[in-house]
Image (cartoon, rainbow, N blue to C red; front, side, top):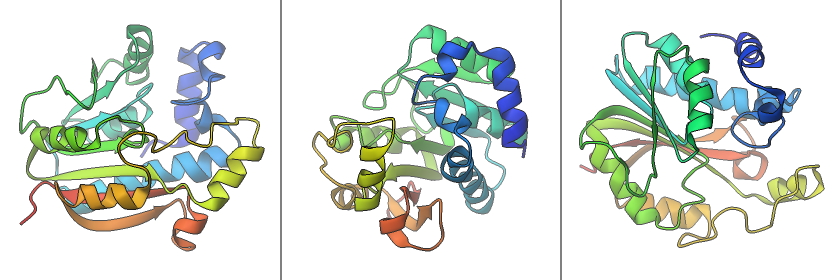
Length: 230
């Protein structure tokens, strides 16, 4: 896999500083130590899980792809696969995503609650830091299941919202509202997991970025799912 150091170098050559300084989508990857531990580690974990549970996927989509960092890594690992990135962001953002992926991937503007994608289209779906923000979780999960191939692989990463996470965020320079996550129909990760079970078979839960400490210490929980319940 291409190193985060090399990826950062490529991004710095492509994107204006005004974009990199913005929080979200790309800036966290450039924060020393934190970027490698929290954001770099989650990419590596997702890559390992795809290699373990999806044999030579023909099509992969990253929903909520931002500027396409993960899309770039996926194309490097699976050069013959159809790699797609989808995001709500405007045309300018997706233009930079195309440049970062060296124009070898497809990018679509769209909403997870109503995906502009045909059914049974993707062998692997990755969706990180998205479903804690949606207004209709059930509709979003139904859409994910609709576009996933039979027995396809779904990786969903959502924040744990542990006490330590909220404390760290409250004292950081990037202060967010206390109800930044889970503000709509789903109010916490436990409710989300219960709803997820109605639509997918959960085959594994991974705490990210650390193997120890459980949800108290870890920033995220990664759900590894299959498209068929039985």
